[in-house]
Image (cartoon, rainbow, N blue to C red; front, side, top):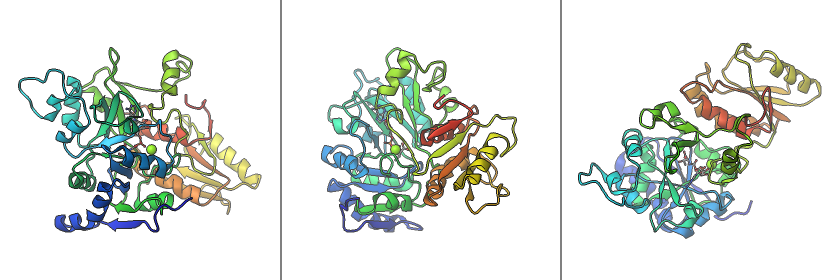
Length: 390
Ligand code: TXA
Ligand code: MG
């Protein structure tokens, strides 16, 4: 790919005290002030950040990532006050104001959510302020905003003094990066700086919530670590946007799918280079039993190499030089699978197998299961045991 910079500088931050940290971050902050994109750590995944108030800076994000221009960006803030630069003012602010949210056009129930769950892995759509560029919102009337909890992300935004638009810092269509090395693998010489904050704590992108639809319940557009259960304390009628066999042909779902703003619906996502086969395991079958084992045996017999993502570590199931296992966790905990999913997908893909095989996790619980399955299904070329996107 075409080089845009002679080199990409990696800025280390491990063990830095505050004053030292600011000094290390300074070149990256200057670069951001010069309208250039910089990769930064967040608690979810690494982001490719640029000044959210400068359309030319944001346009560079799209060209560096090769991102389709009709896929809008998330603007990141480091305080509620900073939302004034992004969100439309309230038509009639309440007389007694608790914080900056009361000055803005934010639904009451959503204020409670944000006061409780921010900073953190939750992105919400809000009516955009007049100054927010169409480059950020892809021309939509709403802007997606997030207040990340990662201290280095917060410090960079503070030092800039403006919000940072940041999609995941991968080439468009590739798995999201959860380490600085992943960013370099995709974007070396395409950006000037990567700030290294170590591996991301959560590993999957933020939950995207739309609570702005008139006369319609709040809708989770992209599942993440903040679950419908967690949101339902404040938004009792919150729903998750999901395509099922029953609703697949309804106007509502078709219309949602056509919207580039529905995360991951229109575009191919997280695709490894080798095709990924996702097996839906009936819950009563033991690990590695049935269809998957049979399928792998057939592939190996046909001379194809297989990389298998297992949900937990255990004895390797097939003795073949063409077979490798990549455990997603030690004991099958969803929080750990979520943290490791993208990194493991990249590691498996790097061995250039003929195919990658993965198994479903349970998604009905109140944890990261749904978000894990959402990413696995988007990465999969073929699903077995159930229809794709069901
Ligand atoms: O955790 C995260 O959210 C990471 C880190 C870097 O913060 N960012 C991230 O950005 O995942 P990205 O661009 O990969 O995903 C943002 C998603 C897009 O798929 C887009 O469709 C949706 O948010 N989005 C942005 N603005 C929107 C809007 N106004 N309406 C509906 N969806 C929107
Ligand atoms: Mg992304």
